[in-house]
Amino acid sequence: MEGINYWAVLVAAASAFLLGGVWYGPLFKHAWCREAGIDLNQSHGHPAKIFGGAFVLSLIAAAVFAMFLGPKPALGFAVGAGVAAGACWVATSFGINYLFAGRSLKLWLIDGGYHTFQFALYGLVLGLWH
Image 1: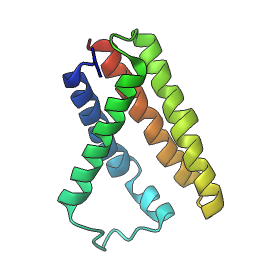
Image 2: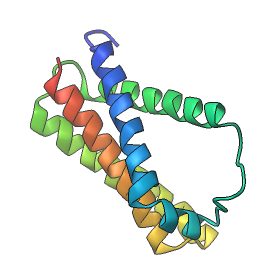
Image 3: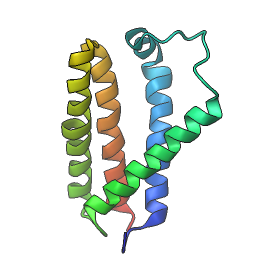
């Protein structure tokens, strides 16, 4: 982690966490819940545990992506690598699982789209803030 900007990693993680709030909130909440079989009126765990865990996982992903990019990555490379990581590693891996689980294409597009933007945001922040 030598040369990695820890503040940029923290901001990158926070940006993706906020993106998730919009993505799985006003943009796709109802479609995602319907496709995932989630009942909006039923509790699925303590919010602090869910959101705290999600932020920690986002922080881990941002830190490892920063290590992958290395210190001071060029902006274009960082954003492009983010899109590639989100679309070609994360979304395709989800796709394999979703095929075997019989999950819908719509659910895969929502989840894969989020992770593509998540890693693009990581790249944007890490590429801009050395």
